[in-house]
Length: 98
Image 1 (cartoon, rainbow, N blue to C red):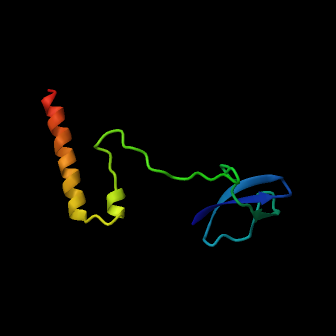
Image 2: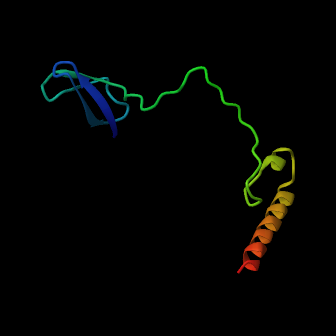
């Protein structure tokens, strides 16, 4: 069962109804007329002709995950070892300040 919007031209209303998938193109409205399937309204808009190019930003602190080296072919074991060392260094600094 799926929830589908239908529009009745006779009573000028849109209503939701649970129907079996795939949804039929028309169902009977409470007023007795035939209501046709109506697509859901678009909830957001996209600005046309705008492109944002992604780029690299310097991490604010060493604990941020940076996978660029993995993408360049670094073995996963080296990456994990580097991350482990960074985590140990952060923990050491945190405990040192206590």
